[in-house]
Length: 388
Ligand SMILES: Cc1cc2nc3c(=O)[nH]c(=O)nc-3n(C[C@H](O)[C@H](O)[C@H](O)COP(=O)(O)OP(=O)(O)OC[C@H]3O[C@@H](n4cnc5c(N)ncnc54)[C@H](O)[C@@H]3O)c2cc1C
Image (cartoon, rainbow, N blue to C red):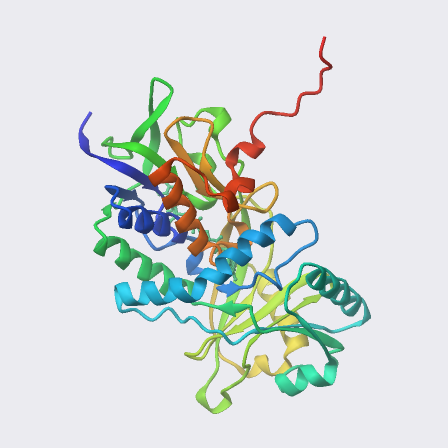
């Protein structure tokens, strides 16, 4: 079998998570390679790019909150370092977020969320409907109240992905632009992958960062297969003509009749409206129903959007895990590590994931902040039999 030079670390998957892992590993002096037919593609081409540790807090996800906050704190330095390393602008914008309620039910839900945020020590300010509209005059007159969260920022995920590709190349990461078909295993240890062309890429350690496809790599022993599933999200992109700017000053979001809708305004005039949440396997069809739902809910929130040109509709796949939190670190198979399952927060979690994975690759130790996210937490099925 033809074999390419072996590396210390081989990353399978060049989405933002695989790329940041490879970049940080190479910076630690590890000989690093990455395999992906299209590095910089993946869910980042669709994602809105909210860095929303506070407004994305959900009941029951308080453990994940710690990691989300750790990553949010790293963002300013991370973005500055990546821009310095590549000369590329990332569209990083610290303009804050406003989460609003349109009716009494939404308002009650938002009040509960505010209480949880306050209990968790987060900065979030309750505003009346009038105060919300003073901040964002394009909001519907019916807005009943909202939460002002200045610490939830945004980045353009497409620019982030492109910059990470450049950073990897500059740091000496070897890019294999093809698919890994199968994991190579010898003496119960991962030794690399075999590509679709039949080439073996050898490595001391393999990091599986295949996003929603992470459970599909052949040859991974059953106990090490990540329990990751695709969660479809449809997103629209509109353009704000110069004469309307600034249309919105910050990210505006709401729960409308139980569905989440958000509008993320970029500095370049792009307005991202998202997102549906659908459990439909690997389907990425943009549907009339999905587009209708997003426009209907966004229009209820900000009626003026119907005046804007609709420039793109797209669907992507979030890598969902059973507890909505990522899987980071060694798997049940020696030599195979996982960096996947980032679900709705992969853009936010990019900086901390890079640091955690580089640390574990360089030292063998999972840092304390990442221990709750070990892939082994889903490992052995719970024993039900009583001891004899
Ligand atoms: C609609 C939508 C909106 C979102 N909004 C936000 C947001 O506002 N904020 C936020 O923080 N996150 C958001 N996310 C989530 C975020 O985009 C993802 O969590 C993140 O992009 C996942 O990155 P990844 O690198 O793990 O996976 P992916 O982006 O899926 O990349 C995986 C890569 O691995 C490659 N690959 C897979 N298998 C193989 C193989 N066998 N061989 C070679 N290559 C392989 C694929 O080609 C792909 O390039 C959103 C996602 C969606 C879909």
